[in-house]
Amino acid sequence: MQAREICPNIKAIISVHWERRLFDALIPLPDGTSYNAYLIQGSGKTALIDSADPDLRCNLFAALEGVDSIDYLVSLHGEQDHSGLLPDLLQRYPMATLLCSKKAEEILVSHLAIDKQRIQTVEDAESISLGDLSLEFIYTPWVHWPETMCAYVPQRKCLFSCDLFGSHLATADLFSDDKPRVYEAAKRYYAEIMMPFRTILQKNLVKLANYEIDVIAPSHGPCHREPSFIVDAYDSWVNGKLKNEVVIPYVSMHGSTAKMVHHLTQALVKEGVSVRVFDLTVTDIGQLAIALVDAASIVVASPTLLVGPHPMVGYAAALANSLRPRLKYAGVMVSYAWGGKAIEQIAAAISGLKLEVLGTILQKGLPDQHCYAEIEKLAAAVAKAHREDDEVQC
Ligand code: FEO
Image 1: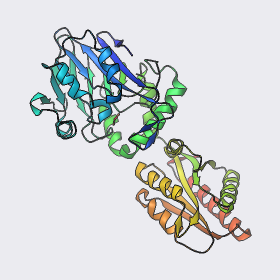
Image 2 (image 1 turned 120 degrees about the horizontal axis):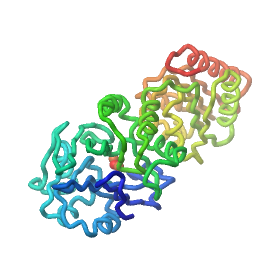
Image 3 (image 1 turned 135 degrees about the vertical axis):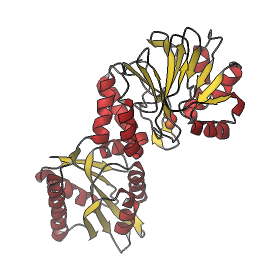
Image 4 (image 1 turned 90 degrees about the horizontal axis):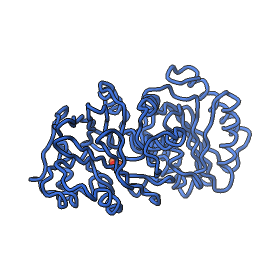
C-alpha cells in the first residue's frame, strides 16, 4: 500500500498481510495483520521508523519509490516483523544512520548481522532534530521485548507506539474509526502480546500520560486519531475491575466432563455469576485469551488421558500460565476411569498465576448426585469470593 499522510509531513507505509494466519508460530491471526513503517520528512532531514516483515519487502520498497534519501532509520523494536528489512534498507540508503536503544543494538547485531558502525544508540528522552520537526525517544521496555521504545514528534503531537496500542488487523483503513472491530482486535492483541507484561505496562502508561498526543501510530493495525479510545481501553484492561465471570476451558472425551461443565455453568448462572465456556477442541485459543483479560476466575475441566489431563487442556493451562492474566480464583474438575494425577498436573500448570483454589472435583465415570452437589458448592464458593472481593465488579 502506498504511503499515506497521518499528519503533515508524516506518512504511514502500511504493509497489509491479508493472508497471514499465524504469528510467532503460535498466535492465531484470524484477521491477518499489518506492519507499519512511518516516513517523517522534516525541513532538514528525513527519518523512517521501522520497516516490515521480510515477506512484504515488495510493498515497503514500492512505497519508498521516489524517496531518494533517508538520514535516519529508526528501530523501535528488534523483532523481525519490524526490523527484518533493515539490512536491505541500510543497503538502499548507504548514508543512513540506524537509531535504536542500547538493548536493541545487541539484538539487531546478533539477529540481523547489522554492522555496528551504522548504528547510533539513543538514550531515554533524547531528541534528534529533523529541522522543523524533531523525534524524541521514550524508553518503554517490555512493550513486547526488553529493548522496545516509542518515539514522539512534539510538533505534531504524534506518538509512534511500537507494538503498544496495536492490533493484528489486516485492513485498508488508515485510522481506527471502525471502533467495535478495532476494539476486539486490539483486545486480542493485548491478551496475546502485552498481558504478560501488565505490571511494567502500568508504569509505561503513566510515563506516556505526560505527553500531549493527538495521533497514536502503532506498528500493527490502524492508527488512532482519537487516542483516548485505545488509551482508555488499555487502562481498563490493565487497571480496571475484574468481571464477575468464570472462564471454563474444557475437553470432554466421552461426555462426563461435559456434564460437569454444564452443571457448573447452570449453578454459576443461578448464583449470579457470568460464564464463558470454551470447548478446547473447537476453540480459537485467542478467544480464550481475550476472555482471560478481565475475568475473575477460571475453572479448568478435563478428562484423564492415561495418567494426566487431556493434552489440549494441558496446552490451554500452560498458555494461561504464560499470559499472566489478572485472574484471582480457580477450580479444577476432572473425570477419570482408572486413576491418574490430572488434578495435580493441572494445578501445577497454572501455579504461576498464584490463584486461590476454591475447589477441586474428581469424578469416576459419569457424574452422580454427590458430584453435582460438589459442583454446586464450588459455584457458591466462587460467587461468595467474587462478592467479597473489592477488585471484582459484582
Ligand atoms: Fe510486532 Fe513484537 O513485534
